[in-house]
Length: 199
Image (cartoon, rainbow, N blue to C red; front, top):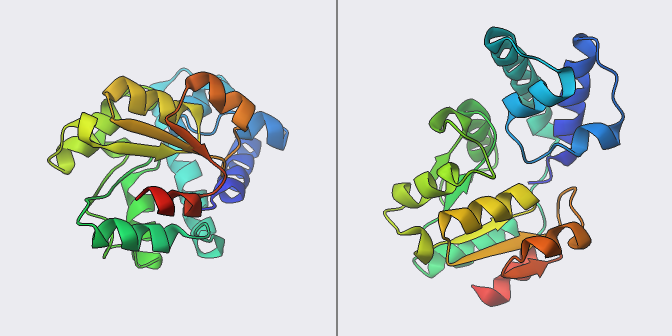
């Protein structure tokens, strides 16, 4: 979904509440990392309790943003075609479980999504492959039989390190084609809807 500005606004509120003043560019440069990692890097936090508290605060602000967000063009068409083909689908997201559950419920995605893996299910975020490996396990698949689709360099790196059969980059996030190309994804597509001919 097009959550870029929603995440930015949530991080902006969070960092300002803790004495930080960052430009939009400084904040979005961290997108794709875990909430805790972004909190650590932006606010220079070291206390685990404070890191957890700040992470929860950011998540609560983002929950408020969800009603204003939209799915990218073609997402439902892609999901429908995936399901029509009998393929299983798992969301591997660097959001907390309650955030993902709200998105699935609010956008009526439960009919398409077989499983999801959230920050609450892992010990290491992308680019570590743990999230992708657990996604494959939830689908009862070997990672080599899976296709990872993401819009950050961390998504592509995680998919590759997990041994996915393909890792596809879409230019819907903060990373440009020039930034993604060195990661050597299987494909780089402008939009999510451009996945349709490949399904």
